Image (cartoon, rainbow, N blue to C red; front, side):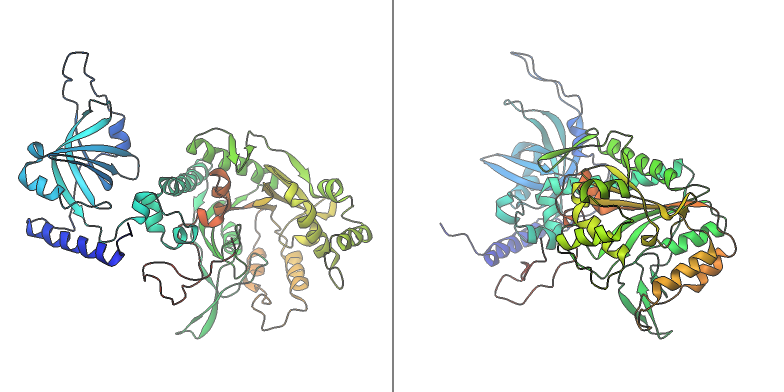
Length: 507
């Protein structure tokens, strides 16, 4: 039998909307105080009937949620109600809810929001159930849920219509509730360690703090171009100069670059800075933040990732950049001739490239995918790290680490460079040769001026929260853990106007 067109289904629901209003009920509901989370209701103690006896009445409960299943006939209807914690069965009898309640039941559709007062107990088949004594209508769903409530399965539609994805796919909702637990844990752990949360500008006159292409916007009143921040780093370091010894910020950063399962142009980052610390202190902090998040999520340190398992049991190994390059690429990072030869073998362009750029490209190509982790890669070539303090024993090496898990970089940290003279020199050499109109070719003179007022020795850390959520909750794409990822605009077409249309971004 052909499926009924959406337009006719919506028309039926519009008629039910009118009839609900005719009952004297507000079809858009209102305040509904005192309701309990379904998960908490399911934990309540409920007496069961002994053989040959009738069960004692269970506790009175009040729940609210979305109707996900409706079945029954005659004078009894069963509903399945889901809130953001769990799902529970509702028994609705005409005798129990009265004429008004029963008239309302006949107008209920999948997707409608209702409140239920009743008694918790078990049916004869042993199903935990709320036996309704009254119903409160809370909101009418004018569009039917997708695929008769089997969930929004098309990946592209799940990203574009996240609001439907969340209420039809419980695992998606749990992913984002888990993300919230991770961010809450970060704040809790940092606060316990004496860090204070701050806010720095997201629109900046100079794009600094990372080597990335910014988004450009324009301020009409001042008639100046501004940049959406690519990192909060340089402002947070100014706060160290000002005497705020432990600071952090969790917020959005923007990079006008590619889109992939590991990259979204707008993403969430933690940056933290600790006066009188170094990159070893930041390794300890990184372990504490991620292990704390794992404990908040539950499930232990052995966590699934695709078909494999990641062991997060601390402490995590620490290997030098040079050791890993020698082990996996068979070269010494200071021997450019061998690096160039190996890069040529791998098809990496070397002509006219700075040796350190080639070294970094070879590391990305040969080493990164083998870093299943969690593993701290430490002691990078100094030339790759213009904001990092050099090792006193070897100025060619920077006190930097990156945390890798399953080939993905999740964290980046330094012993921060606080020498203003060297910092200025490195900035100038980094910017040399870039055209003046290039947005990344501007010197942040005020940051150098701030360093001249003395910034304390410090450790600094950045963690990509989206990637961490991917790993801890076993989601293969960064768009699975961002509520509203950037999508290509919908193309005009003959499809239903409520449906996403157009070419997807790379998956």
